[in-house]
Image (cartoon, rainbow, N blue to C red; front, side, top):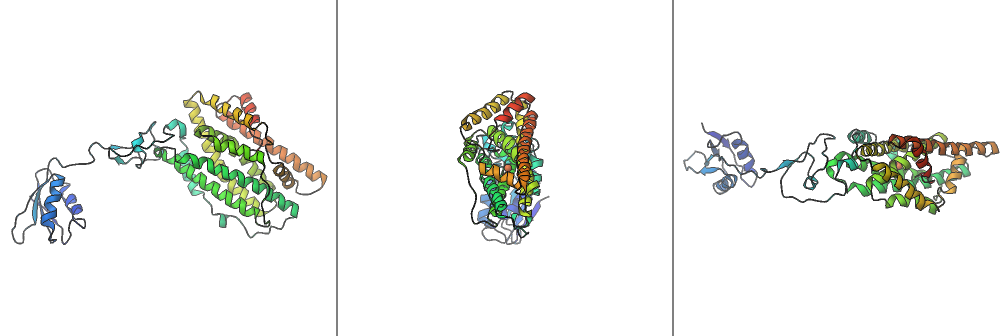
Length: 397
Ligand SMILES: [Fe+2]
Ligand SMILES: [Fe+2]
């Protein structure tokens, strides 16, 4: 029995090959397909297309009959022969070392051989991966908030001048740190093999998080004040050591596990002692995001530490090296320390200032406890974790 396809007025310049390929698909080699159609160019284009595809074609010239009868070829040319699937598209289904040729294809696509082989600085699973990445990305995407509406910008915010200027100083410091928290992952994203899609996506959202943090802290700083506070050389020295770190694992250790980890405590402190609803809500929203950044850093390094027994030594060296580089710098901007005391004091009596001071000391203790906990989570023994936490930058990040 001869199969039939009617192309109507459709020619090869408008997609006739789609109907033909669909009609030929289920036929076995040698089977016949009668092709009807009105496009005058079919008599030229149809034989040419069939030859290119490995089909034979007969052109009967019976009035009212088909334009052509195609005999389905047996060795139908297939440009996809030799193509391989670049792994699996499913969340988290990654291989240990994806070939460079997979890099620009969607993970799980059938990849035609012969394309470019771009180099990626991070092409090994153990160097970037964490099993929690797909879940964390989904959570991060779901929890994006809009700075314009998530914060009560119009709320009552008339603070005494010194308190307002303490807020401005803390915000100035936060923006500076957020900028670096954006810069560091942004630098690495392009170097990660896209096979590790969920890590790339997660870091991209992390960068977007930091962009929002920069925005809301800047906006809070300028809410009542025409200008920002101070930026100390020591603070920037500390941040510069993060910017300069070119190893993904060491950078995510110093930034996420230690720096952002300490910032989680700082933001919780600001949420607690914020003198106004705008500051409180900005701190709370940033805190939610930062927790995720820390979770990824810890998960990725804990996984890597299991696979690579030499990692602990390198992490230790990274902290020590950074400590030595920063040994002669002032660390935390004094203006920031004082501003935190003012916010935690809440009043200008000697007793209140003493309380504020004690609370900032408690904050530093909480940061140290958190760092030690996370270092232990990465497999450092308690005494070494305590020692390394003490060497962390006084700038918090
Ligand atoms: Fe941030
Ligand atoms: Fe962050």
